[in-house]
Length: 365
Image 1 (cartoon, helix red, strand yellow):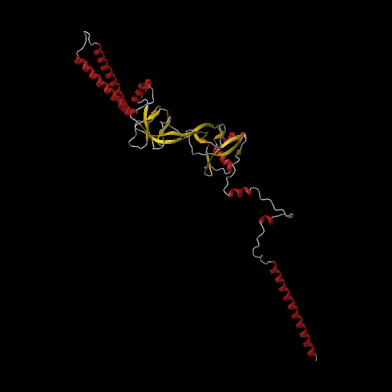
Image 2 (image 1 turned 120 degrees about the horizontal axis):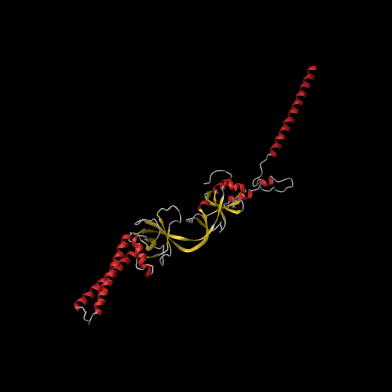
C-alpha cells in the first residue's frame, strides 16, 4: 500500500513538470511568431520613404536642403557655373603683392587672310631704271637733232635730205628703245604703279638703290578678291609675337607668280630688316572691322583649361573674367565680351591673385 501511494505521487510530479514544459514551449513559439511579424518584408510595389521625409522634424515639415546642394545639382547637369566673385585685398596687400592695373584700350579688329611674299633684289630694278634713263636721254637727243634739221630746211644752213632722213630714222629707233625700256620696267614693277608722275622718279631711284624694298605678295586663290588690298602686314616667317611686323600701305597688281598659284600684288616695304630674297609671311584684312578692346598678354592666366584676366571692379576688389585668346594682336588679345574699354585690367601679379583665390598657394597653370 505504501509503495502504491509513493508511485502515485511520483507520477503526479512528472505530469506537473511535463505540463510546465509544454507551457514554456508554447510561449517561446508565440514570441518567435511575433518577432517574425515585426520584421516582415514590405509588400510588392511599396517604395521607401524619401530621405527628406526621414529627416522631417517633429512638426512633420521636411527639412531644407543643405546650403549649396541645389547649386551642386544644377552644375551636375552641365549648366555654366556662375562667375567667380574674385579677390578682395587691402591697400597694404595690394602694395605687398605688387598688383598693377592698366586700362583696356578700344580698337577695331578685322579678320586677316594670310599669304607669302618675297623681297625682290634691287639690282634688277636698278638695271631696268638705268636702261630707262639711258633710253630717255638718247631719245631726247635724237628728237632734238631731227627737230633742228627740219627747222633749217630752206635756209642757207639746211642739211641734205640724206642727213635729215638719217636723223628721222635715229629718232624713231630711239623712241622704240624708250618704249621697250618702259615696258621692261613695267614687267619688273607692274603695269600700273600707284604713285603719281611727279613721284615716279624719286620712288624709282629709292627702289633702285635699295632704300625701299619691293615685295611680291601672293595670296591663295579665292582669298582676296576685287581691287588690291589697301593695307598689308608683313613679318619674318615664324615670328613669335602675334600681330608684329611692318605695315605696307601701298599695293598694286603684279604679274602672277609661276611658282605659287594665287593672286599676286606688289607692295613697298620701308624701314625693315628683311633681306633681299627673303620670304615673308603677309596678312591683309578681310571683312568688316569689329569694335572691342585689347587685353594685354601679361594679364592672361590659365585655370581649368580656360584663359582668364582680373578686372578691378571697385577699389581693392578684383574679379576673374574669362577671355577668348583666339584673336591675338601685337599688344595682347582682342576681346569683345567680359572686358570694356577703360576697365582696369591686372597686368602684374595676376598669377598671385589666381593662387590666392583658389586658396591653393600653387603656381597657376
